[in-house]
Image 1: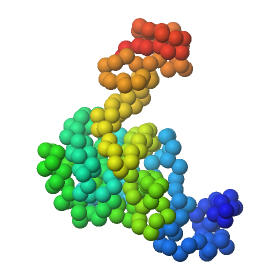
Image 2 (image 1 turned 45 degrees about the vertical axis):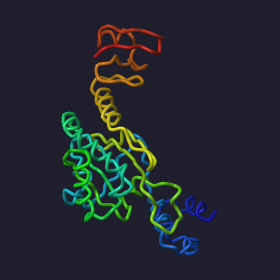
Image 3 (image 1 turned 30 degrees about the horizontal axis):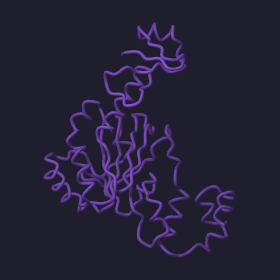
Length: 252
């Protein structure tokens, strides 16, 4: 109750730190670390600016916004080095490096370990996946970036041990806006082909002013947005196939 009142009264982390009830919070380091992170937690809505950060990676220190530059970027997190599901995932993304490059997309991974173990783990990934990992992997042993991007399993919050990092995917456009998020539990490996598919959908929608239907793949018919009239769509795209007044398909 006190924390709820504090949020309403002060609204910011600094003000909350000065609140009388703040001194009464449990002294356990894990709890206070979580509380502080939650007070600072940005709202990661679609269309919001991806929070910036500095971090050590397997390719050197980065400023995330500088890393993005003017490219589409995929940030994806992993619970830990030398874990089985994560090893298969990174190998799969590494094998698709040329596909992402062709679309002007950068990839950057994150694993909740110190930088020192990343290098040895990459050797395993390359061996198991028959590939060569080229993208950087962020070291996030203290979970600062995991908390910043809310890549945390609720079941671990409040425990003495540091919270578990889940499998999150953020697709960020060249203007640093978050365009898509996916979150998976630690037990479920991601679908790398689906990540590539949604990149195609987002880039096509931005370029051509269309929407894509269920299970869409490059070359399939696309949907005319409701904001575009049928005559205007015919002028822009040519043939328009009307299933319902609100569901119209065309080719691009």
